Length: 506
Image 1 (cartoon, rainbow, N blue to C red):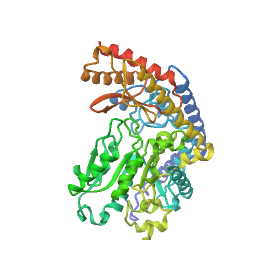
Image 2 (cartoon, helix red, strand yellow):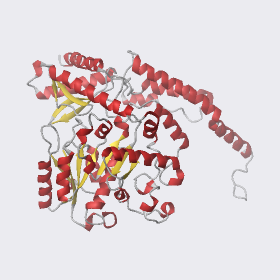
Image 3 (cartoon, rainbow, N blue to C red):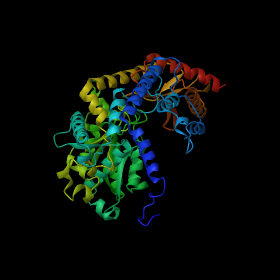
Image 4 (cartoon, rainbow, N blue to C red):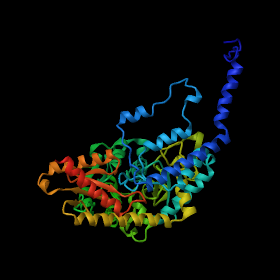
């Protein structure tokens, strides 16, 4: 080190610095970006054509986890540039080994097969990298988010005083809404006083509620006693009478229930809780009604199916995942509040270097006051682009198509003597079991059969479906997400289940 305290004055330091700058400038070159982007779009378009139109395409080119890790091991440090893969080669490797959600025989998790145009909006979002915690970092993103929040709130039936915010996924969304509910209905300032500032708090949900709600409650410090699970009826719905009884029992135990979580529709089967019925109970008790509409709220775009959500306008808060049925990539979740002022209560703290110590409602355009995320991306961009460029009709058509396809599939299952339907679907989710006659009386063996059949199908790459547990039994679960799926694909699924079952059961 020299007397000046600088260690870059050694011989060769200037040439090293120039070489580093040259490498960086080459990576930043707009013309390199143009070439690589053109090549990438060609690869992606060819891949999309392959997985949606080529009968030889696999849903999932299965690899054991350790094989996948080895396949994508990074080059060693110091490897020469010409020995490293090109971006096109890397993308080709990614596409060749990836799970293909656009494939007509992807019927697995509730993850969208996004509209191709959203890959372009994602490209713009990534390049701009504008955050939305403070307005000055992303003015267009704030404007787009506000427009989409207003549009979704109107679909719910909320009035002019409604507001909300986009967050990264339904788990964060449910936690955010429940934090606002706690601050609004606890009867004391939990944010400042902690849980010891008042009586023990609790939420009520059903046995079909998504597990992220239980997780959120535990993150909030409610513990085992703070999550009251109410059994659903034969249709897997939470009923008003059962809810009222649970609230009475909680009060007897000295618990203060600040929120009820309703499902619209549930993750396991897509069932819609009777929201009007639950809203009556909550209104009479002064309890916050939160609707987890992560999956099923998208039916509000459909004139044929929006009636399934009757009463949702009476909710205090709603979570709605755009990345499930609204054809956008993960993650994009709207948290909507009937009274918009409640959105500022979920995270009631001060960050003076960002928000200048002002009342957060006066700086509504700084979204960091209302979200867990401090570096918040432009999550509404993709849905904004769909609504602006294509209009809501494409979303209604998608919801209607998948819902009708699910109903038709359920009817085929119901008519087949060797299959059993768990419940008639209200959304695009169908749960069923294969029950060959020789095994009909052996429930444990039938459970194992569903697991074995699913594993063989997944590892073959022919189909991708999942499983669930309902009433203590194992069911195969199909969620229709790809716009390319049709009845022939589902007929092929049933026949393939039969074929595999004969093999694994023999």
